[in-house]
Amino acid sequence: MRAARVTAFGPVEDIKVAEVERPVPASGQVLVRIAAAGVNFADTGMVRGTARRSEPPFSPGVEAAGVIEEANGAAADLVPGTRVVYWDPVPAAFAEYAVVDGWRCVPVPDDVPDDVAVALMVQGATAHYLTHDVSHLAAGQSCLVYSAAGGVGHLIVQIAKMLGARPLAVVGSDDKAALVRELGADVVINRTTQNVLEATRAATAGEGADAVYDAVGAATIEASLRATRKGGICVLYGGASGPVSEIPDELTTGITYQRTGLATYLADAEAFRGRMAQLFAWYREGKVVPRVGGTYSLDQAGEALAAIASGQTTGKLIIKP
Image 1: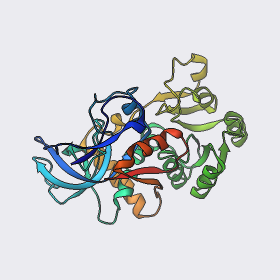
Image 2: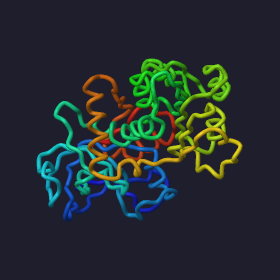
Image 3: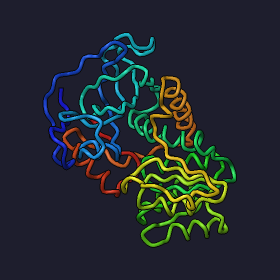
């Protein structure tokens, strides 16, 4: 089979496609013929070696949608010919085939396209747990959403509106500002021309947001904590600008500060299927519609990773082997 390969840690542009042996599913696993693989910012760290999950050689990519080719003792509904979407922290998805543990696979409804299924997997499940499990976002509340035009952010904006909350969307360009306005953001903050903290306080009568969702990390966390109202919650779920060091106590006094990761909230088959069922339902009802910001071939895997690393993309990036 053809697969994008990392033969040594280094620049994402160095990825090349090679012919490799097709994997064989072990007990409890399935072999998936990949139709669409998702591109995530975390993939860039795996390729560069700054966030190691596999040692070279390996194929990047931790999520994909496709069709089961072989099943080896997986769940009864995971049989050859079944369309599924999955997430697996061990990278392997930028390829024509991948093996994955069956409990990580969720059957995809016939009326949900592969691109949508992938866009609702990592990013959708993240937006879901942030708004429903960590912050319990409710009608009438305000939420500050960093990277609001990105894969997770643009879904949080839509979910917040669906819940009757008031999203304050932080973006980095006029084009992204237009996108989040279209999605229903009540307030749009262009960080290149506005001070995020000042704009948040101005939009909330000086109190700050009830919930702050920060995927940027080191460059933004202080402002995020200061932008959280007393009694509110600030959630750090990513580190695009680098890891966050120790937080002074005075920044967290009176608020809840939490660092989270997807693995905690997708820990078993029930969590996978329950979250995805809700996300598929919202999509079918037109309440949450993911945006695909770019589609790439397998040979363009390095280009796709360079694009997401640039911070200039919107929505979800897809690789189609």
